[in-house]
Length: 200
View 1 (cartoon, rainbow, N blue to C red):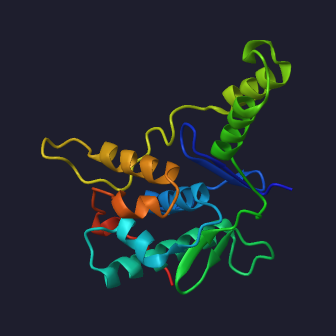
View 2 (view 1 turned 30 degrees about the horizontal axis):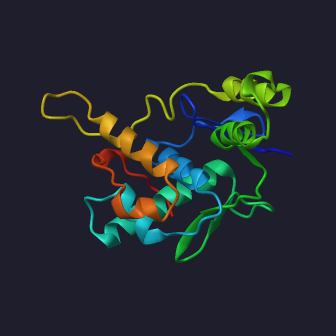
View 3 (view 1 turned 30 degrees about the vertical axis):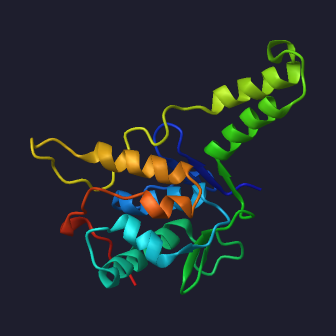
């Protein structure tokens, strides 16, 4: 039975056992969950995740911030001591468990589009099975990936928010399978000191 539902097409929405999860605090924990879920099954080194999220800090500080964000995320998900945890955390790596009881709208969307694309038929428009797959995919599409999402951005030179650059970076990283993304994906904004996570 699905317990965790993650919606990234359109606005960021997550629910656990039918109840919306809103205790993430700053968007950094949401971004971390989105990144791990989009790369489910991949064991991502802590150093890579830390450098993507806190590129302006040295490694020791970035890893400290990552530990705090992970504590917040695991608390929100009820993961600590859970029989079927969503996250597999070791001293070296982070991984979203692909067999955990979760549902991700992006994965469901891609599954249906891929099924229609790969199905042998003479004409897509006259293939009932493929038309149904595409109709279901269309129903899942709630909007652009992480629409309106930002990561604790700082004001730009003209005083407006610089959230778009962070949003673009996270969209690119999440859709690009690790480890390719770790070579070029960056977060170009900085986190305000008052918005850092606290926790053990």
